[in-house]
Length: 253
Length: 284
Image (cartoon, rainbow over all chains, first blue to last red):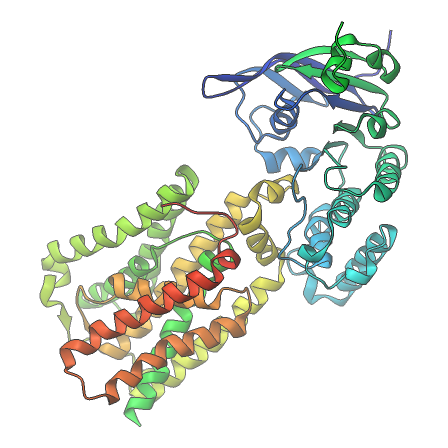
């Protein structure tokens, strides 16, 4: 039996939007250091589950614990400070800020810089180094002073993941990282996500539709269907599931 | 010369007030329309306190305390209401304040107002007052420049685009928004106090919807989170309608034409830059 404690434990979670039950009695435990994929048909509640963990949707029933602590009463910013990082399905950067400012807004919080840091040379130099190193890692140094809005979809994703690297947290919730990303950039994305797990020690939950991309990354897969947990297991076990094949490949008995 | 210094004073008063509107409406997308309330409240509180015989310093403390209470009421509404309901609430507060001023005539003088307000000795003449106000305006512009460069300013700009994303970085958008509303309220309060030193007469027409139209127009025309845009926008909005004075128009028309001018500017700017100003669609 695996004795590692759950970093995040979700018990009997239900989320309702109006009369529509979007998540229905979902229970899930994620161990520290795991990379877990979350898949299922459109509208099955994958993003809602991430939103529930982040604190962006009200919970109908159930509990969510992070590192053994009940986080239900915490606001989203408080959950982020606790160590829950998030990337979003759409536009995880601020398009009206420069690429550098997009890094700075995350880094100054993560590094706990004082609010007056930009008036002190020492802090400015430190921040410049953080920004330059981060952008160099993802090949965006040339766009440092451009507005983030001019970047391509793939570059935006890379910028978002680069900012997450600076996040001093323990859990990352990544929502459809390959959406709008050219196939050529997907390998770089996969490398970055692996680095976040193996070098930076993040536990990761990924929502993704590209199963080939996902199954190369994750230790375990959870399948949601109609707001309920259908099955979970290793990528190899999941691929044999008939219902999953029906959903993704249209196979029928 | 008196006319020029009056325009300098008007520019300074409007710039200080508009800085608050710029931070809330243009930079962070919080449609806080309670600026005329704190503009007028500060002036009334100071004048009424002085009428009771207190010194200027004590009157100013009373005035800013009243503005602090008002701004905390606005913050409470901001935290509890949806964005659109908050906007309507702040708009309604202007009408509520106007009704309170007209009704409580034993204190405020009602529709007849309070006349003979004296200026402090250090700004006893129009020239000294105008120059003092201009210095305050410069300080206000520098303050906004500093704010925009700090984490607070970045968070304000980011909030306008995506509040959830800001919160996912560990930044409380509600706290940042609340701070912006309080700063905006106090900038309007300072503008109200120095304006009443210039006018030396206070009645219910001080502040109100005309002021709101003026500052919202400036904030919208400024649009970008840049101090020079704010300064230029203030200059245009304050000084351009002055051209109407030199046309041979009946005085009863000039005031209405000024309002028409602001409305036209708003329509043109909103049509052309609405996507830049309002990152999210707003329906009131």
